Length: 412
Image (cartoon, rainbow, N blue to C red; front, side, top):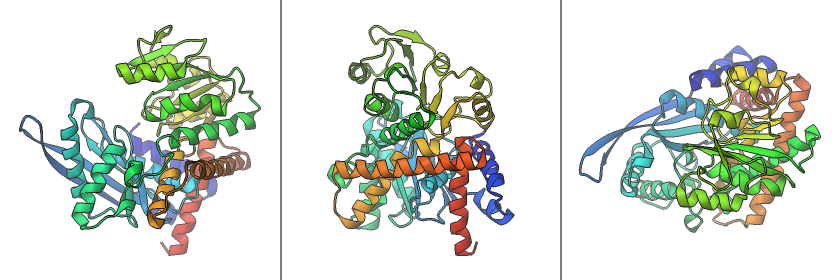
């Protein structure tokens, strides 16, 4: 399914559960604004190449738009709109005073030099500078963007407005106003929610096995943090864009991370059997963590999922038809808008630090993330039991209700 169709279908299901009125439905099914930009970039060989970029500002009833910028060949307008919708529900389910936005550029960052990426980023910052700002729309990193990308964006934005504005973007290096703990926030939030799910389902962590699809920023840190939050567990399978590996005895995660950093892929790690990404999804494990791209669990493979708990570190990895199959089969899914909300939560902490010009300690960041994640997990779990629905519909019900209430107070 088209990502926007998926987002709308998930919204409709939740809107039915909370009996949302027709007016609010109409408003909340469309983005408020989508900006398309063309970004000319001089490549290293002297050629001028024009890249297509987008910024979708979905809804700001609860606060400024918030959402990442991704660089990927498959970026599309519909994908960016869907992601901005998911950001709207994600900030709402975490009860943050923010809305939802998302940006993207159609490009292959793996084939571009640092110089080309910097010129692309600065061009994008110039192109969208009129619609972003600390009280308007605050971008952040996403797929194939990082703290360096954010630093370039911030510097170019400051040039455009003529003054320092550190709150315009989050995920920056700590040295220029970034927050401690932001690099691991998505994974830490995911593991906090997963720990709460293990408790709620009465599943022991000792001996639990974990498969992680995607070994980028979120997936690799999930592996690193697994034993802190699930004592006695072991990571037995991981994958990246080059392939997947499996070892039923578990991996030495520190050595696996070192191997990935050295070779650029997980394949070839000593003692591991190479499998396919499809094989990884259907392994007989306790916990499956999809941490790659959207649309990975479908109606075709959902019935084969054996994991007791699925924690969605990625955005949109499970299609709606698959949700129903997983629910019927007794699988407990922690949906993306809850499971990976640690990143946006610490991004909000970074915004607060920029406003007060006072940095927080790592301990404070982690304590406040813990409080937010635990409360939000139980808000959603309680709604799931109240409505008799799976966790995704419950998360959407909580989020859509909060945004709809804000809309009604504002009179539209």
